[in-house]
Each structure stands twice: as structure tokens, then as C-alpha cells.
Image (cartoon, rainbow, N blue to C red):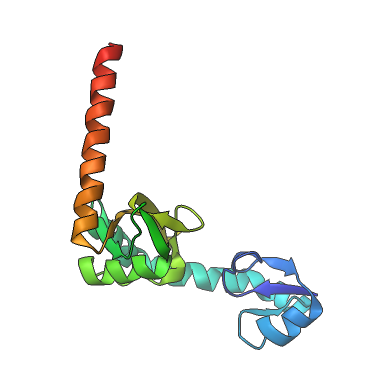
Length: 176
């Protein structure tokens, strides 16, 4: 079954793309949920009109997206989570936690689906960068650091990082 997607869907396609899906998936899930329409002749002819309307809507929001990108430029988030003694997170950090941290720490509301995580799953403490898919013409990235919620473990990992930095600096100075 050929359908026209009305939303970006992981592993299916991008908005306004014509894709082929199994009949049951399209008829019983995508179309009733308002995520797609049947790609018949009428809807294919109207596709350009849908794209123009979407472009006009996004262009009206462009200034707001640029303001959000400017507000988060150069900023960093701290995401605290439960961590084992090896630095491995219990579970993983997802775009939901990043969206919540953006709202709580910077006062910026962004839909979690517009946050593209650096890896499939962030499972270790450390520094990462997520990409914000706000608008095709606005590139925004947010740095975040995953830190332990236990102050004792946080201090322990900070000491390890400081020792590693000293070793790297000493090694770099002996190379020159």
C-alpha cells in the first residue's frame, strides 16, 4: 500500500514522503492515527499544496526557532542519574530527559521527538551533544553532561578524570 506520511516516523520515512507499507499497518494504524493518508491520485495531486502550506507555517515559526537556537547556543545541561561504580547508567538517558532538562534548566520547551540523540542510547556518564531538529534552516545543538546523582560517586569520577587529564598532559609534553 502506498501512503503519504503526515509526520516524520522512525524507520518509515519523512513527512510528505510517499512510502510503501504493509496494508494492515497503513490501514489499521497509520491512517486512523492521522499519521498518513492514502497515496491515491487526488492526494498525490494535492501533495504540493500540503508542502507549500507546511513551508508557510514553518517560515512563520522561523524567528521563534532562531530565538531558541540563540538561547541555547554555548549552553550546557547537567543530567543527573543513578550510576553504578563503573560509571554505567542504570537504564539510559533518552531525549525525554534532555527535553526535561532544557525546560527546567534553560526554560526552553522543545518536543522530545525533535531531539536527536548522539548515539542510540547514552549509557555511560560523560559529555555528549544532541542535535535539535527545529527547522530545516535552523541548526541547533545542545551539549549535556551525564553526572551521577550520588555526590560521593561524582567526586570519585571527577578525581579519575583529573588524573587522566594529568597523564594525557604529561604524555603530550614528553612527545614534543
